[in-house]
Length: 155
Image (cartoon, rainbow, N blue to C red; front, side, top):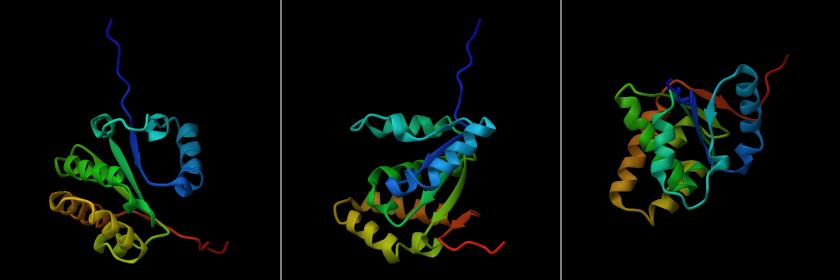
C-alpha cells in the first residue's frame, strides 16, 4: 500500500503582521472553507534555513506573492520570490501577485515606501542578491494580479 504525499495547492508569500492578521486571515478562512490546501510559515521555526521553505514552494501548484509596503524588509520574502520566479519560468508554478496597499509600479521599480525598504535592505546585501531580487520583482509584478487598497466600491 502506498501513501500519497499531500502537496500544497497554494504557497503564500507575504511579510508582516498587518497582512497575517488582516487580509491573510480572511483568505485562509476562505481556503479552508473550499478545501484548498495551502502553506504559510506560521508553524515554521525561526532560524530554519530557506531550503525547507523552497521545498514547500516546489510542492505547490500556485504561489501568491502578497506585496505590501514592508514586504521588501525581508530577505526571506525576496529569496522565496526569486525561487518562485525560477519555477514559474520552467512552467512548474503559477505565480499570482497581490498588491496590498502598494502600487505595482512601486514593486516593479522599487520606488515609494516599498522602494525605501528594498534599498535599505540592499545596502547590507550582495550585488548578486540584489540583481536576483530585482529580476524577480519585475517578473512577478508584470503578471496579471489583484490590487487591494482601502477604497471600497459603492454597492
